[in-house]
Image 1 (cartoon, rainbow, N blue to C red):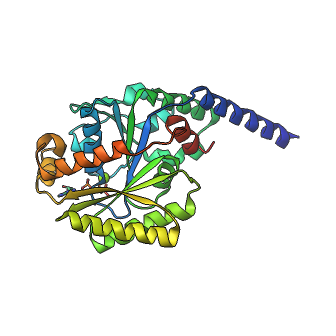
Image 2 (image 1 turned 180 degrees about the vertical axis):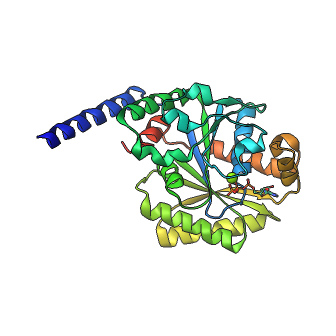
Length: 291
Ligand SMILES: Nc1ncnc2c1ncn2[C@@H]1O[C@H](COP(=O)(O)OP(=O)(O)OP(=O)(O)O)[C@@H](O)[C@H]1O
Ligand SMILES: [Mg+2]
């Protein structure tokens, strides 16, 4: 009996959550997760500058720093967030209280390793977190910068997103790890609508980028039956580490650099790709919280 009551309670609760999600209706917020197999390939630089490029196009952009590593999005913009998503999950802060305005026209949310603790949230925390996340629907684009490799945290975001951008360099280890990541996505994630995209960073020629992408596309198609779209390449450019050193996004520090020009091309290309009509924030939240 007690079990039945519990089950009923759980079902009611799930219904409430999905009602809440349905009430949101269609939302056109585009959610882009930036990830990689190997670390240090340029995710954070790409996520941050991609956000800035979108903001320059007049879009409302939020960058979520889901990586708690050292070279974070906040470091790249010289910011020191005091609170993060974990405080929101624990109902200690409202999302509006932890969103930071930056000098670059984008907003920043510091993530939390606690994101992997979603499963341990109480019902009350979960409800509150869902409604907090919905306040992000005013954004046009949400870019999530993840840590490298296959952790629960990363897989959770990847599984929930409509678009996943995999960053690699042309180093053999980076390519192998990128493929490993794609394989995990293909085998472990039940999200048929996921659109996989690839950027090849730190190349010395356009051809080098294309070769890496072509190989990846081919093996993903052949062995995993998965389509990977090539978004473009970014030159290895000394302006990038210099910008990092100055704690400024390279698009701002060196707007006419090769890296900036490549990044703008990539964003223009991304803008041209179709987004699924039923994607956006409601689907993302539903998948992230396992509803
Ligand atoms: N196009 C580029 N040209 C030259 N250097 C680059 C380029 N892209 C990134 N870098 C350098 O590579 C380093 C790592 O970049 P970044 O922090 O963006 O990688 P990441 O993938 O986010 O790393 P992590 O896995 O640790 O989070 C930085 O110091 C940056 O200066
Ligand atoms: Mg990073």
